[in-house]
Image 1 (cartoon, rainbow, N blue to C red):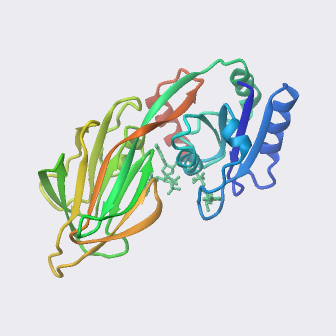
Image 2: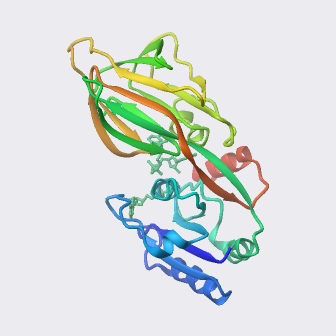
Image 3: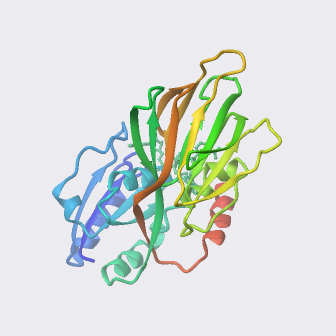
Length: 284
Ligand SMILES: NC(=O)c1ccc[n+]([C@@H]2O[C@H](COP(=O)([O-])OP(=O)(O)OC[C@H]3O[C@@H](n4cnc5c(N)ncnc54)[C@H](O)[C@@H]3O)[C@@H](O)[C@H]2O)c1
Ligand SMILES: Nc1ncnc2c1ncn2[C@@H]1O[C@H](COP(=O)(O)OP(=O)(O)OP(=O)(O)O)[C@@H](O)[C@H]1O
């Protein structure tokens, strides 16, 4: 690879010391290198010529920054690799102390590429009109928000009623997202290249509290049910933990496999489970 674009979280690389170092290093090795900063509002609007023409995106930050970058370049088919400057950085494979080695490997095309499935979600109002849609690499979370009342979530798979959870929320996760919120809510850990969609309730107050694994060919619809005390309840929908969207009883969220994937570059041969174990121990 020859053309690199860096997306840096300026909260993590405060004076851009590491960003500038990487740009200079790549240029010294005869490559093109450019950078941009994540914008504070998390909006994805600016697409520079350098970003569009790059062979690879290097992300400097934590998992949140990598998720931001993945959403930004959705559909562009460009590979991503993260340099961990976050607290945990599970999705960010590279460490700063070995960065030259990693950059040399990228230049010499010594890496593996892993396609990670993503999901798309569409939110429909009471008259079945789509009011919003978005994509996620980790998860779509439907949550009671600040409201301390149990909500009813009516679940359909391919339009057939599956079950109803009384819970704080529902997480619909990809295999990548299985190690994030879904895991905290008791969901299974899934091999990142698997092709499934995971449905995990958050604090379900029903006998069935288990996660359900669904084929990636199917779509899941979550309807916000009527409340016990009041007919119309409100909930929040968030894609990869970003910008919550308000929904209320009768509205539906349909989640299915997205047409595009996130391509993550891999250099280490260490298994995803060992990495998870190591990062979790370091994090504590
Ligand atoms: N209780 C929880 O575990 C909880 C609560 C809210 C959100 N989240 C997760 O946070 C994600 C957004 O991440 P963020 O960094 O912007 O928010 P954040 O800063 O709130 O991070 C949440 C934690 O999840 C980790 N994380 C994120 N994606 C991961 C993945 N695929 N595998 C393993 N760990 C992962 C992050 O490193 C961080 O430690 C959401 O997609 C959601 O899955 C988790
Ligand atoms: N778009 C953004 N631009 C700049 N800073 C941001 C942006 N979004 C979040 N931040 C800041 O970046 C930090 C979170 O970034 P990130 O998730 O990459 O790191 P982390 O939480 O330390 O890492 P990890 O998620 O791996 O534990 C927060 O301090 C947040 O205020």
